[in-house]
Amino acid sequence: MHTRVGSSFFLIDMPNNNLPLSVTDQITLLKGRGLVFNDEISAAHFLFNNNFYRLKSYMHIFHAPDKHFLKNIFFEDILELYHFDRDLRSLIFNATEEIEIAFRTQIISQYSMSYGGHWYLDEIYFRNHSLHFNFLEKLYDNIESSTEDFMVPYKKQISVSSCWMVPACWISFEVMSFRQLSMLYQNLYRNDKCKKDVAVHFGIKSPLVLENWMHCMSLIRNICAHHGRLWNRTIPKNIELLNSCSEPFIQISNIRTDKIYAYICCMLYLLNKIEPQNNFKLQLFKLFEKYPSTKLNLMGFPQGWESEPLWKI
Image 1 (cartoon, rainbow, N blue to C red):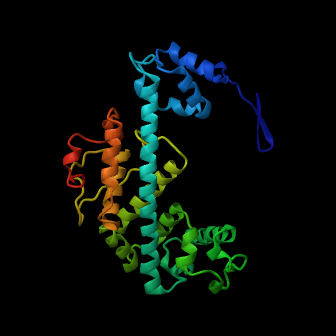
Image 2 (spheres, rainbow, N blue to C red):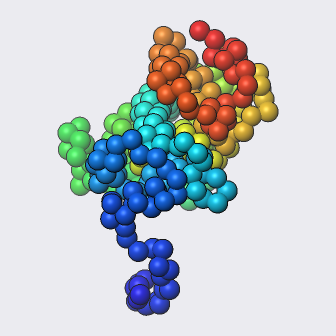
Image 3 (cartoon, rainbow, N blue to C red):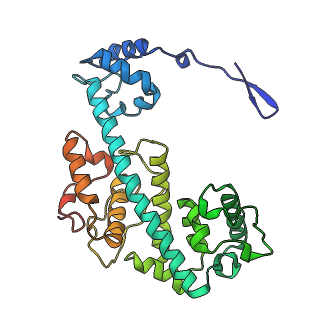
């Protein structure tokens, strides 16, 4: 097979196991590996609408070392795990939305009240001026491509030399992604009182920790937005745990900080500061009740996690 990359061609040796399989062949393959089907018609309907390779990532925990399935494993067991992960993503996606909005609001409020609405155009507030320039270029692109009604008066009027043609931060920041927002905060001078006050608002003493948390929240938000597997994933960035805090947190410190449990703990801590009456905890408990066979230890949940101050009802 010849594949073109740019102006070059490469000859790729494609193994036979990369040949496509029909849905019928997919079911035959799974049955040959010991998977039991209660309803092959329903299974076929699901596979017609959901990529087989996507579903494979939920099969691994049911495999024996020889890649066959353990005894008495049903296709419905895999579907239950798949649906649990889908519902978990939905819950976390909604939570990160609340966090993103509150984070954006605090940056806008703290900095504009101290330095004016166009403070973000001035490099004096930023540690790395090259990153600041790149940030502005991306922001201008976002404004020009925005379809929001509130951006109409500013589109096609962006000019670096005339900062007043650029909207104030409470307008322009509304078209920034969560990742852009977290990178903006990371590049701000850490000894600036405004940056510290943003962290304190969320019950965090160190802006460095909030930098890490918001990067992690934007990362997990992106996984959810692209429908990625979440429940037992090893996340490519470790989230930092608080040593001291103003609200109940966790006391079991020897947990994996690259698993979803650590992320969820930090997420709940933030939500408790944003909206003390939030129902995230109850929704998560209901999710576990709905899918009782979920292996929480594979998500990084330690024994006794329910007794943590953060999780007590």
